[in-house]
View (cartoon, rainbow over the protein chains, first blue to last red):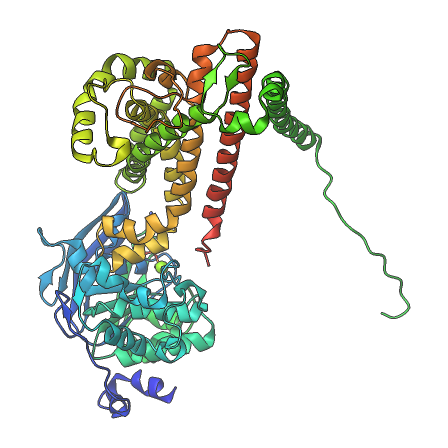
Amino acid sequence: MTAIAERANPMSQNSTLVTERPAIGRATIIGGPPPGAATLEARGACAWFGDRLVLEGVDLVMPAGQVTALIGPSGCGKSTFLRLLNRMHELIPGAALDGEIFLDGTDIYATGTRAQQVRMRIGMVFQKPNPFPAMSIRENVLAGLKLARLKCDEKDDLVEQSLLRAGLWKEVRDRLDSAGGALSGGQQQRLCIARSLAVQPNVLLMDEPCSALDPTSTRRVEETIDELRGEVTVVIVTHNMQQANRVSDTCAFFLAAENQPGVVVEQGPTRKMFENPDDPRTLDYVEGRFG
Amino acid sequence: MPGSTRTKRVVTEVPSVVDKRFNAITMGAGISVLVLLLLVGAFLFIQSSNAISETGVLRFLTRTEWRTDVQPPAIGVMGLLTGTVLVAFVAVLFAVPLSVFCALAITEYSTARRRKWLIGVVDLLAAVPSLLFGLWGFLFLSDKMIPISTWLTQNLGFIPIFSTEQNASLTGSIFIAGVVVALMVLPIITSVTREVFSQTPPGEKEAALALGGTRWGMIRAVVLPYGRGGIIGGSMLGLGRALGETIAVALLLPQVPQQIGESIHILQNGGATVSGFIANRAGADAFTTSGLMAAGLVLFIITLATNMIASVVVSKSRSGAGVDL
Ligand SMILES: Nc1ncnc2c1ncn2[C@@H]1O[C@H](COP(=O)(O)OP(=O)(O)O)[C@@H](O)[C@H]1O
Ligand SMILES: [Mg+2]
């Protein structure tokens, strides 16, 4: 826990905690995403559902290897923004968008770019754990390979590494062939994280990944996020201010006035956002005075 | 609180007059359907008792011949059942893949507008009177299918049931009847599978897409495994329909019961089904009629059982997978 608390402070970024744990290997996936974390940048991002503009002019940089938290009251467009980042938004009938999203400098919405390619590089973990119930734990972890049609000759290694990264290996190592749906809620969510990590994405998006979990599972997931720092860029939506404070390096505060589209009111290093933000509304929100 | 007496009460809701009436009406409708079903069964049983008692239950069930010109008459349902089952299987074999793709096109590959349109078209197919299908199969399709039957027998003829005899006519075959019946059962299978597919948990579908899957990859990983029970159940419902299908087979097949020693040739002219045979022979002498009733009773029991198993499979598949945790 102290590790996390200390991590939350971007100023102590050079801590030695990372070296405590032996590095987890990286199985080779043929045709998979390029290695390493990637910077994600939104420029003038807008989103519509039908005629309704729900998100307007979001400019936000999510630096490579860092954890960016998106905070703000319900309905202000955080999930919508997150789904813009890996082209899940376009799956909703009537959904439209404007602006650009750059993944290491290339626009993911450029003509000719396939959504499948983008989603393979930018993984997503949902609010409600959604493992494939008909598949075993092992098959769940490897599902992404099959779906994205990737090849890997070291599948056993990949399963172990992904589960290790998600902090689930110890609990399931002896029952990899049992059903993924038979795990507890917290374990299921970590299985979903392992499943996303198995494709070795450059970015991992998480939409309130802990809101359906108990405190212990929540802590586990937070530890996982902490360990992913440096390897994968993490963007996490959370309603839990302590969580945002604990896990994130940078923070963006979303807000939507009544019948107005959501906007980013303020963004910056997490510490500044929580201690002396520029906008009084940010301070009110992080101190729990509304939302 | 010691000393105080507790009174235990069971509180029940008092239904309003409207609810009471509605309840009575729905119960009545349900019971009358059941009664009707029993009446049909009882009617068939009574009417067939003459033929069955004369032939013997086991004899009737296992004999393939149907001869009323000898004394005593030798009738049995086995030859008819063979044809019935063969036609139904051919029909289901063609209809299931087609229906599954239809259902997927409707639930997974369509905008809201196209979905409505496609559902309408499939429902329209269900509304076409089966006589028209039969006539169409008899007057049009039968000839058009000859090249396909020829190709099949030339290339798969080494499998006994695909072989044909020298100079045999390739019209009026079990194969062609099966294809026509396939079109008739397509709507029911499509609508059951579509219903089940549309209940696939959206979270799992999104998970598959978010991993970089294509729509087809998502369907294979999520929708088809989830809908498997529905596909099986829908196919069995279709099978139940196909077993009883009458007009098309009565028009198409010569209604000669399959005999024991004869080998089965589904690609050439021949074959009979229970329903088709009944339709062709209806209005004959009293003993034949009683025999036909007995055959009908057998068909009634088989289709009822098929449909009941199908309903169980379908109803289990919806909640059974334990998907929504
Ligand atoms: N599928 C949808 N169709 C129409 N409107 C939607 C849909 N999803 C979200 N919205 C609307 O978009 C706005 C932003 O929603 P969302 O991004 O889910 O907010 P948040 O995640 O911050 O709670 C809300 O007003 C919501 O009603
Ligand atoms: Mg949300």
